[in-house]
Image: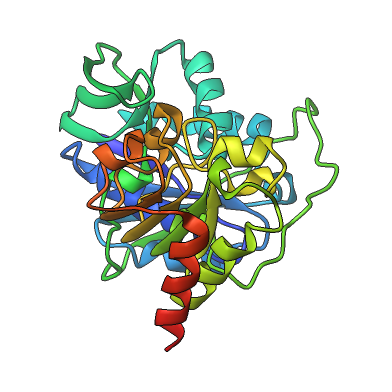
Length: 310
């Protein structure tokens, strides 16, 4: 079994999800290579070469890959597929954009959002917003897989893989990059934060949401939100956690004024420790919380902030 992992990066730094994806690929039971496609991204290839378990890093350095567009990347990956039994990417926005196209070109069924590898052809993935787990078997000779990064431990960095430059591909001209709008924040990135404080509709207003931000800042964490809070305009949608938002698994997740709809739970229930603060003692969030406080958030959170400051 030979697997090729598609590295995610910003042309300077490899993203943490890649390390977890390597762990998933190693559980297939064979050799693992990494594809680094970008522009002026030799530093990323060097970082990828240090990931434990990686045999070889394939470096495709060309301006056509600068913005991680699905069309040229999928063409490149399909061209490399002949040498591999499995093609694996993180179940991120980028992976979900690229890998279905690869699967279509190869005429195979994609196995999406894998959270466990049972054997080289059998996988576990969540269904029904995470309320059930399906064990699926792929009969395809080539497997196209996206792995949920939060479900696998990040691979360490003790490797010394060889780096091999590979030919690039021409731009198919089916899409072009227009602009990127980046939200600047001094807080950790949501999907990689060790601590997340998330607010829900129970916060009541965008001005009151500052309580969530204050608590997150004291703990050195990121700020998240339920879809209800985002829809109410309390916070931008890039903070949304859940089935239609971001999937997170921090060491500590504090849910403030979040009732716990199944769509939200699907995005955070793998957190190591879950703390819920809600005045409704029957809120579903308490069913999965490790610690629950039935209290008015406008009384409990300021007291918690004062205690932490002290």
